[in-house]
Image 1 (cartoon, rainbow, N blue to C red):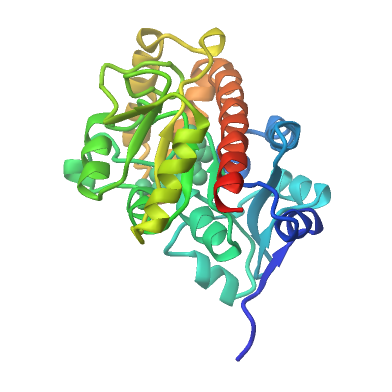
Image 2 (cartoon, rainbow, N blue to C red):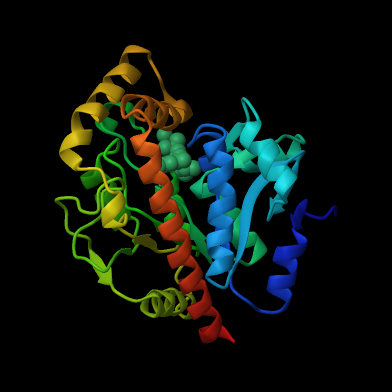
Length: 306
Ligand code: PSU
Ligand code: MN
């Protein structure tokens, strides 16, 4: 039998060998979520935020058929500059690897890769969810079903208003995914700290989040937790300011017949244009904030499992 083509970077392998905390990072946010060169700066910054908080970053991507757990700077740069890199979710990951392809991993695919590599905590910006109009399009991100079956805790800034947030929370509840707001009762709305919806659960400390993750493992419950960490107040954009912009982006997507995997990247790019870059500034602040919290959770988890 041939071995699974999975390689840990030297930094990640050393961290895991010495039982120190590791945080997984996705790569679709680099290739499809932000424009070059900010995407490269952010990828580096987020890695350094995690190192600064005492953990080791493991950015995940498929390069020439190999699943890489941790990228070096040249690999990060190549991904950040690449045009037309595949966006890999659960459905595409194995096929890409089997055919020697190169692709960026979404939340769902990054969770699968993290679990294969033995990494339990993952930081990102926003997860995919139930799109507006899903009652007609059936567009529901595979990220939600992944959270139900793969035991990785994902730190995100809630769900963005390009999604139907209420339906997204309903699907997560049906799938048995704990949704935990950090330090507040409301479910955060990505670019804004608060949405009108109450989060099902609330925790105020990284140690509690780590304990809940560990408890699920002890109970052999499959699936992860969604940690909804609000954007720092000084970086948020008011929901009222964004509402018309999101409506415009959605209308443009409909006019241009954008479907399937292209929907999320299209909306993100359109909102970036319509806010003249303000959406990106906020996005960067919240991803870095999530990375720091994920590093703390990973550190707490190490003390529980050592
Ligand atoms: N939301 C963001 N930024 C992103 C994504 C979502 O704010 O970059 C990416 C993530 O990789 C996520 C994916 O897993 O989009 C979801 O895509 P889809 O809706 O096609 O499942
Ligand atoms: Mn979709």
